Image 1 (cartoon, rainbow over the protein chains, first blue to last red):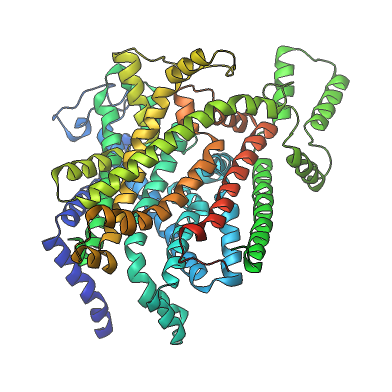
Image 2: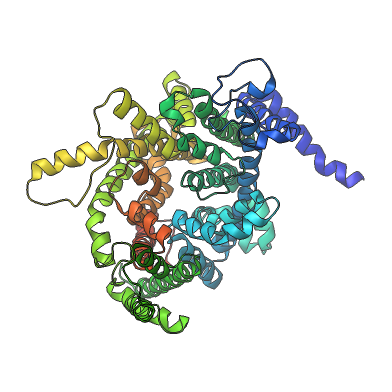
Length: 297
Length: 337
């Protein structure tokens, strides 16, 4: 038990430190908490909330009860419940994409940049071969091919996140490598290499402090990449349309041209949701990099 | 400057370029063939529905001819070699969705629209975004930079297509000064004045929707973060303490370090413009390449989809190739190896 506590203690203490000292981190964390709370509320949704025409259509927001808090859609669904489902599913897609793709990218980028030579060549060859294919068209084709198999699964949402990880790791890898190439020529890395330190040691001790801010930015970007890719596919009607995500909500908004019919409560909700998701993650990553690099404060 | 090592580097890099394009093309080909849409069966189906062909024997002949025309006969490996040969000339045969027109002609007639739109908006947003990002980061305690940062934070997560719809809503519906549908047909090179007027009329809104978001979103935020990082490096602090004039620090210490990663990203985005801006083009009904490739993928039109994808692959691959060759000249810390 004792080693566990020593591992978690610095994390807990720096978290409480951040919450106390950093406005950006605090704001971001509060927004994220609201979003996560909304996502959790979705588990309390009545079963009827996933069906069409279970509520009166086109109702503006009112405080009568929680179902019509944000009004209803043109296909008779509660915007509030749809929104909570959408936040949950979009967050799952984004977080899975980010966890898988940006970590693979970070590892491969550091290894390629540090080792150089044949390893670098092979890794970058694979990366380049994938990067040159336009991702959106590839996802269009992949989703069209796999949709029937994915839809048959009980919960297709995590698999969409995995699909975006197929090529999502390439950008972080290339960027991390570019930074590593520059970093490798600096004295402290050279000294570390010449001192005979192992590659893991160099990766964690020498490279990571310089890459951490970049990695956190990459994480937030990857979350957004996943969410916006899914939304883009959804707008074309290629996503899993019977599951609520921020993208499929926008798809139905467009399908019923809510924009031109003045159903403002319906189209503002997913847009605001997307802005909140992004702002939360960006503010958190800003706060963390300010904490790591005290001169930024 | 031209040493043996440099020549060797260029030779290896050129070989990698060719291999990259080859592998990417093969990957695309396999993916396209895995798609559950068969264009030939679609055509046959439409013939059957309209009652154009009723004789079963003629139908079998027709199917055979169509498969031959589109290079879909023989074993998958033979087909692959066949397409590889066609790749060298970029001639993938006739398009399936608009039948007798060769896919190459179809795509090339739409290329000027896409290239002009995307090259213009990418370059403009890159320049503006970087200038604003560096300035906002240098004077980050001022009110205006705080406003800019919050503005970009709000604009970046708005997807392109939402911005596009809002722009259409404002400028076509509330204040109707722009057309609800984009341009059609090809650019004819007869009267320069009318071409420019035409282009501005049709491209302003799509360009605006791209510039607003990519300028204030990605370019601004990334150059802001990069400048912030560089500013805290020891040599910049030392330069400030030495009392060097601010323009000097900006030019010699900040800009060089900030622009390096940004140039990489710019090169890649410029290489990627051949793929078109799919969603933006569809929403504005802009007659570009993205629109064509969307329709091609949906109807299973391999020749057209492959033409666009190959062009895009070549564009990005050549862009990275040039970047890799030029990088050591811009960044003296990087050596050829």
